[in-house]
Length: 310
Image 1 (cartoon, rainbow, N blue to C red):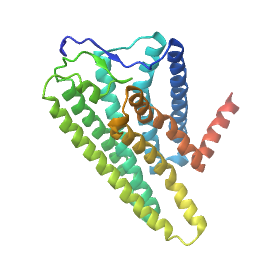
Image 2 (image 1 turned 30 degrees about the vertical axis):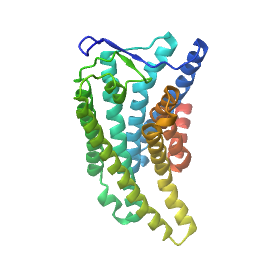
Image 3 (image 1 turned 90 degrees about the horizontal axis):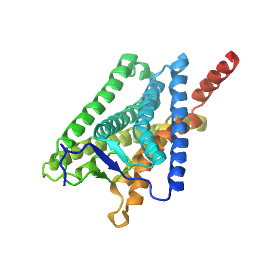
Image 4 (image 1 turned 90 degrees about the vertical axis):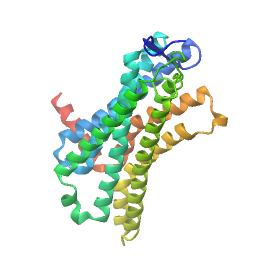
């Protein structure tokens, strides 16, 4: 038995199988990670470079790409390194930082998705008041609030989790450090404090989800009142990428949290964690770039301009 003061490192759950399968996992994660780096990096660069995209919608999209880039960089590189070196170790400090940054970035992403749904609502339901309601100062303030809320939430969870005495070993049954897995190592009833914090955070996340649903109910009602089919198609094209990203984010998160215990297994838990932590950051740029003509046009100009300079 050990306690938290004597733990210097944790043991992450490796991807099961032979050495060849571990190397396959490394290659798969490397491909996904590079795709996420390329996709989110291009979105950030294109929006920052093209002044025509300096609007509230693209400003929030840039922030969303930053959270996706940070979230996947928090978990995937360490897992790839462990697979390549055939090890399971992560330092105590590394585990603390993983939990802090992952919660921070996921919390900021939930807030940003909620803000982006409000942006869609104003653009479609109150277009004449768009510039008034979504001025540059307002956008900067709400984006800063989203990042600050994510940081505060992460700080509270991380500090509370690692203040608990840990006496159930140091094996984390996940491919990255995760609060529920750390709580399983606790031998004190004080872990109930962290459960209450998780409940409060889950309630706030549910509130964000409700606000997104309410926004889209109003959006769909407004779109269906548009007389022309072309107008309805244009309005749907404005919000469908965001709706697809929200659906991917919530569906993978809900599956990971509420999958039936009767079908739960280490392998399934591993797959579920990959779905909610790795897949959305890699797929989100593809969703936005495929449906957004302005972004595709700006990206083409950026690539052509760079090619001519070469």
